[in-house]
Image (tube, rainbow, N blue to C red):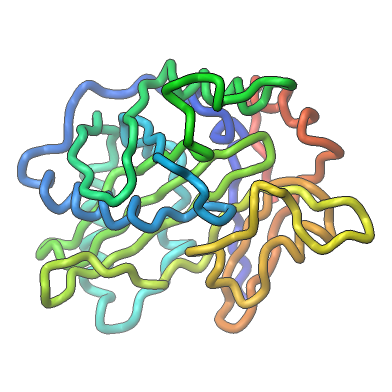
Length: 275
């Protein structure tokens, strides 16, 4: 059995600590397909809980520093191997951050927020007694969504991007999203992703198994044959990295913490945690 080592950068849980973003927008020749993929992502975002966002908060730059290596996390059918190799080469050539524009075509309203505003959201989610709903810009939003750069094959028929949704000290979801352009020209999501990272915490002993009242996994996480909260409830609160090995999902790493406020100090450091 092949074991895949996953890295979790704790700093990614707190927005606003990544390198300074670039001022360049998505190149013109990539813009239409990039925003079509982003729109597909945001119409069905991968969250750690049921989607109770009245609107979406989206960071106004693509973050490539959070990406896990796709070779560890994406397994494509044989018919798409060549296209996938081209996509990986495209990633080597275009792995950089871009400023994002208001070009998403999605059902829900959204706000693009700056680095400073993202950092404010993160601090409010961590601070005791703080509430993001008290800030007009954040009101109605549960998650802060980060989009990675979109990578393509040469014919622009296969696309992949890494996404994150942060909703609190132990509430978040990170994963690759993979799409194939169908005969209608729409980007259809493919369930080729083999690993993801989920942050959560269990309820009190003796209660129904729910790691965090932020909600239960849906979407990408909802496709798990065994819900991630089962692992979290058994092992304690923390960050959970999962790898799909065909018929089961295996827990590779759980970083245990006694309470939500105990995670504040790691966010201020530049260290890493490894499974």
